[in-house]
Length: 491
Image (cartoon, rainbow, N blue to C red; front, side):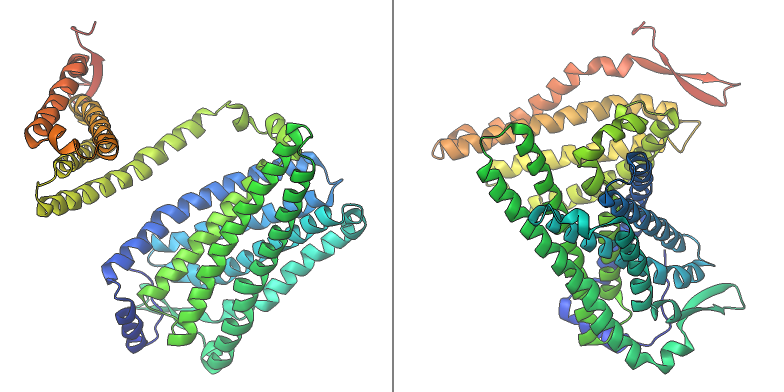
């Protein structure tokens, strides 16, 4: 689907950086589409669901501890950010109003991303004080101060990134039938000043200062917990488990913060060096940054609340999904996501990847029997992926869905076992090659490998032969639809 482009002539600069990095335009567009249409929407839905659960759990926990107030504010910011990201994704599907959605949503999205990072920074500072000065944290982080700090975060972020909402505006084009994004008059009149401010002041706050504070605080807390663990090694395992959980949370948050910071600094670098606001590589970096921000947002609920033993009891008592009492609609929704989104994408990747593998292995020749094994494995993987795509079509073709399922499911299971058998033989070959390097060439000769591959197919077909006659199609509703029924042999 074509992307919305700003109406700015930057073709000269675009060709400069595109030639420097030698990136194929189609590859960049493909990666951007995967990020925009698959990864980011899924993460956004996870973020909405997870942070709604967090708000329920934190509300039941009460506000005796100011940390709960901070976490609730963080969950609310994460929820708003996820909803804005879902709104931004709709522009990829709604052509006519995509530019309007983008122009009025991207500024608030960036502001909420910085709000989330400010919350993480404040929580990191609170954790440092709680670990280093445990008797002073209750006097420093009182309820009124935390509320003022949260309010200041929103005011600060809105003020810092206030140029974003007025940089671009929608313009009706093509006889009022579509909308494109163009620079606003305010942005054109003050372009140099706004660009300098966003790339030097605002970007450094977001991409350098806040991540540096979080990483420094996480390092201090990690060192203190490690020292405490060494001094209290004779204590009960529960205390060590608690410290270990805290260390996992610290490492996870630091890892995401480093990724966000690195991507932001990369965008800032390209913007300053090549003076770009448009182009394939810039779009890729921007989409990647959005995806990483959403990843951070979607898993904040897990890092800050679900990993905390303080809220574990509330989770189990308040949230039914953690007790595995799954609602039928939830199960159907998850199943549809797997059937219509995840599995088809993985199947297409499997087809493309294994076709490339077969071409590469064919050009490598068959001097090594390992190449023959790998080619047979790639062929089995390719057939398995094609059968999986065929099985997915039954979700869309109602009339012949049962017929497709009956005649495809048996071969699909057989090919899955064939793939596993190939992996087993390759593992055995690798063990012999490592332990007995001088004997592997005598054991794995070409004729034996081909015989083994043939035996794998015969063995798997014979082992799972009952699958072919367990069910049969039956025409119903005046021969207009087909259902699956047990066969007479199976009965």
